Structure formats: C-alpha cells, structure tokens
Length: 96
Image 1 (cartoon, rainbow, N blue to C red):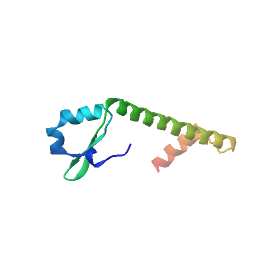
Image 2 (cartoon, helix red, strand yellow; image 1 turned 90 degrees about the vertical axis):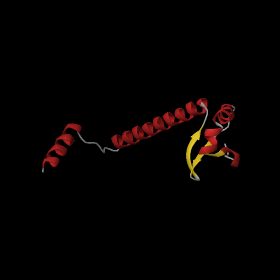
Image 3 (cartoon, one colour; image 1 turned 135 degrees about the vertical axis):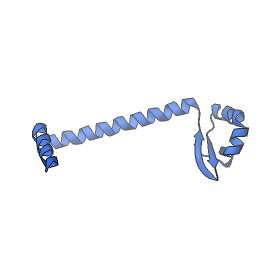
Image 4 (cartoon, rainbow, N blue to C red; image 1 turned 30 degrees about the horizontal axis):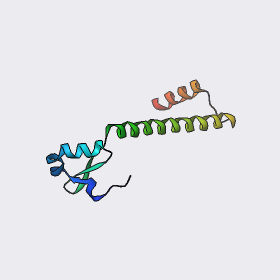
C-alpha cells in the first residue's frame, strides 16, 4: 500500500482529530504520525496488525526451517561433533 501525503499527519493534528483518523484507519487507511517533522508512529487497523504479526511468525518459522535444513546438510556432509564433548571443551576453555 502506498502512503500518500494525506496519510502523513503531524502529532498535534492527530491529537486534535483522533476520532476522524481512527475512522479512516478502520476503513483501511494507514496513517504515519510525525513529531518534529520525523516519522514517529503508525496508526493501523487491528486486522492489519494481526496480519503483520502473522507474517512475522511465518517469517520466523521459515528461518527455523532454513536453519534445520542447514543442520541436516551438515549431518549429511559429516560435519558433526558430539554435543557432550563440545560442551565439556567449552567449559574447560572458559576456565582458562
């Protein structure tokens, strides 16, 4: 979704017109609230927030799947170490 100039609102104007902005956001708009001429916060609808959170969860799951795949590749290539031995070496290394 493109942000237009009308979607950028100074903080003082947002305070004065919060109900109207909320109605616009509820209808699907997104607003960028500025403070001292800089982006400060965004005003988005609840359903859009839920959607963004779901996208973030999906991204995390994809990253975990990718890391698991790399681990499987390491196992297939024989790049493995015994976990107990590795932890013991780390403990000894930290003591020195």
